[in-house]
Length: 265
Image (cartoon, rainbow, N blue to C red):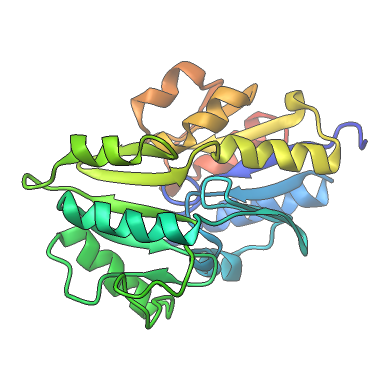
């Protein structure tokens, strides 16, 4: 065990990157580089699956990734854990989404999957357009059953049967309400907290040496787990009871500010 070494876990959207520019501020990149130079471990801890973190991987060097709300954990070059939704259940899930009039994206380790017909909900259209730009959309649609996916993200509108959707998935899927009709759906028993626990075990890190940085509802499990919880300026109120340090917005150098104030750099 390396005494004094901390493990830092950063959410991406709204924490490490600006929601408007999708970029990491220079101040955050410099602060993270300095923290690693100081001997601390830095991990991205995100709801995005491994296939969707490439833009961030190009921007910054870190020690590893907890992806897809704990469904894939990578330390250095070593995959500590990886899971997918069983294919039979995945086929059922696609039908459940359509039956209850929701739409969205199935997130896999290598690619993501959309319905072949044009989405009718604005966010599904935006997501598909963005993923096409990034070259991450599979040629296979929901009609094919020749692939696996790790988790999924859906949108509901006034025509959706959200209650029925919840009931159809309650036996094995945890649904995170992201607000405004958006739902992040993860295999039961997986979260950003389970990713942290795997990293702690791998490196021999104590919970008191774990620092988490987040802003939204899928960060709640890691805020409930950790003792050092940094909450961004713009955030979901559900996280406030667990926050130990309130920082500024991403665009106002909130990450670097918190790291300096907490003595990490």
